[in-house]
Length: 470
Length: 119
Image (cartoon, rainbow over all chains, first blue to last red; front, side):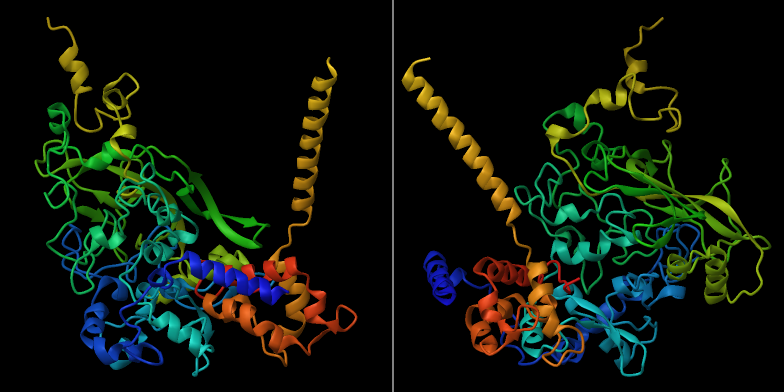
């Protein structure tokens, strides 16, 4: 009976669906028989692999023309310290479990487009074969940590023991889809939307009221439609990324490629665009679907009984109003191994946008300002990293700081203290249509969101213009 | 109230009561594929089992669909279920349980958005 029903169902579906729409055709279906790891891709794509090897997505460092104090160094998350999970070196790969045996984390390499080896600056066959092409390019590809031949751990397709399934998935080659990018970029920082605030899983399948570009009833654009560069180099670095992958080709809205510098019907609004980025009005709030981490205090560990996991003290925010500030395309960054510079309020500026009202290259942009509390080496006043994976399991923050200080700086027997930090992060996604963009009074009214004096004005310029003259 | 009006009210009330009752029954009888997997599949297909370990992410969606459409009865016709008086597993699985199981494995296959072990 059951088989009869199934057969009827199949016949019914086959009758309802046109034959050519039954299955998507992929370009690589006839290119190879069996997938045998990255070397299958390298047979035809060695040049592409070499270009990817040099990219920021593989190296986790890049050129730094936008960092005014970088002095030409190649920088990225691999060799700097941030106020989220600090640095990937101490916790690159490994399985951390809680007392219940549940997996808490698998290391930072989970979001590296490699198979588990640390990226090296030296090009080699081993490094090329470490590239995981499928993590970005194969629809339906998923991977997990497995024991490697040398007794360590490596990332492998979860289908590695199912050749038929592996062959099917490995041939579904496409340009990266929204889901491919969001897998890492929406989950960074430890949870959904924790880090970025404006890059949410919601963007995978949403409508134009959430994001006019990516909404399926709007532009239905893929991430690569804007971020595409060449030779595996991505355009756009936000504000706080250390490296620039596509140097000399900054990403912007109003350069004529998609929008002009004067895209509005009303001239009055167009007059604003010379000094105000689109995002200021068209992203009224961020973290609209998932709350984002607005502050992370590593000095105050707490225990989450639900997850049997030790975590820092988080302050989460949802529907957050961005901070608006000047930005000329460059930033100052607090670098590792350098005495910290504190601001007037005593906090260390991790990444600070440069620019001012009087700087003609500066425009107003929308920012998430992330605050944190980080360990600081007392003697040299260097920021210290934390072995966060170790801490998740045992809650020993002191041990995690000392372990990471040794792994990153080679330091032993350190004295350290805690310091407040602050990072400016650009908000560029979740662009809303004109109907829900800011209105004049959102900035110029008595309860306007802009800090006019902080931005270098004596007061709201519109209010000043409308004030009775004497 | 006229007799006709009274009848209309009674019939409408009956419809409302019946629709609530059938909704409640449907909710009560909602079968979870994951529960079916744990009860009927995992005893023979757990880790290190002789019959081979299977979880939803052992196969891709196409393979699960082919398996349940074409191979399940053939490969399991001689299999008895130790947790159900050693009756043939084909006979103890109800049609609803079978459908829920098939849907759940496809939804959480290796090439799905949410690959899963049976948890």
